[in-house]
Length: 100
Image 1 (cartoon, rainbow, N blue to C red):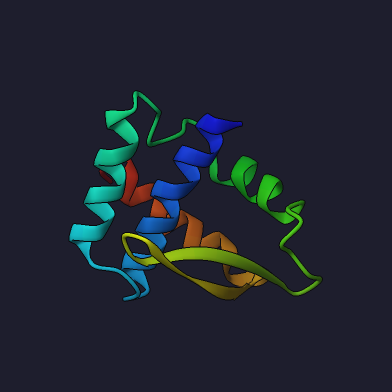
Image 2 (cartoon, helix red, strand yellow):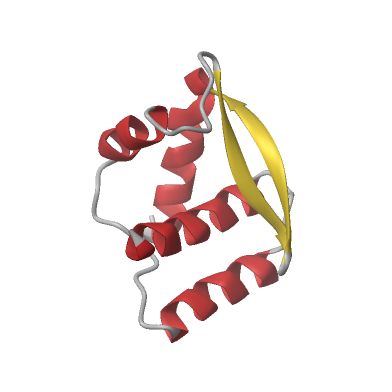
């Protein structure tokens, strides 16, 4: 579970950067912190596998999922994302993380 949380933190930072919520410097610091503890920062799971896991998350309502996104180190915001938009949000985060 800890590895999944670490990967989720880095993905949340990617999403937050894309949405203009956090800076690239903040995203890089989060990734570097995660890797400094020997934890993974990316996943080999497909977009559909990740989406299925997120859709079953307890922070999801029928139409929206609440993401915890960093603004800066030590400060996060809750952002509701329509479930229908989650695929494109995840796709962008995965592309960035995989260097595509």
